Length: 271
Length: 116
Image (cartoon, rainbow over all chains, first blue to last red; front, side, top):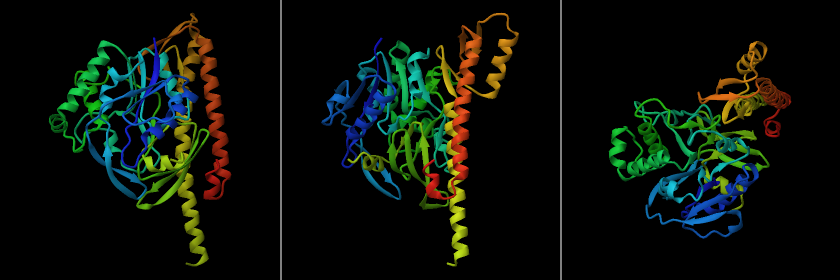
């Protein structure tokens, strides 16, 4: 039974996802001690970090706003190849992690030694807890629970293959599913497609198909700034309540954090 | 701005940062009490410890089945060893929480809060 981590890295005009994937791979090796493969169509300079570099042809070209504190830019965003991860993964047991999910603990090593074939985060914690997190609780006001596609684990089985087939179908018929589940987001989002597919795999009822990742997924939004990373500590400036252009400093120790501000992440790794 | 008002704003700023950092510490503590046993995920909470201690004291068998945080039944081969593990996780997590919380309380400026 082979096991490993799969990362997706598709550069755009300004964000060097491959460089961030390098950091993510180094952290995975430090804390989880398993091989890491990267799926990309961009050149990879430091091959030695990766077990395999898996080429992919992603011709979708959507755009979204990338925030860097109070500033934002609309940039290209290629993130649709993730739905193919079942076929792309070279491992029997795969942990898929967003490159901007920075590991500082061994928490995810739980995945390898537990009986569930699919694990995903539902609970999360915003480091600016005053912010309205309703969009991360349910996919819309009167709809189904929200799950994070940021980190998930799967074993290659007939059932999990069916799950990814459904996700792919949702992606292909996004306009229909968006209307059906009353989703306002215009762009295709993996989180939402995964949430819908999980709902379908659960027989449109309470969850039983997916297990929960341990604890909560900690995250900061693009409007927050990552200042520094040192060992297992991360220093942030998170947006202050009622004054979005001022910040509160915060330190995290020994917890994994999803850093949505890619620009500040790149500054911290000197890209 | 007069000095007294400026000082008041600085203290308000400090209090806000302190409150946010305390909340992060609390969440880190909840993350640190998680542990894994025989494919199950457990939280080393006071409730869990009390129940396991009851099993150790009252049960005739060293083996027991517990329902984990994912609501899956998990076989525990030796419940006394499990109690040792859960207590060890609890002590480690609460001691770290206490140490860092104490450091926070002694930090009197926003800058010093960032060092904790």
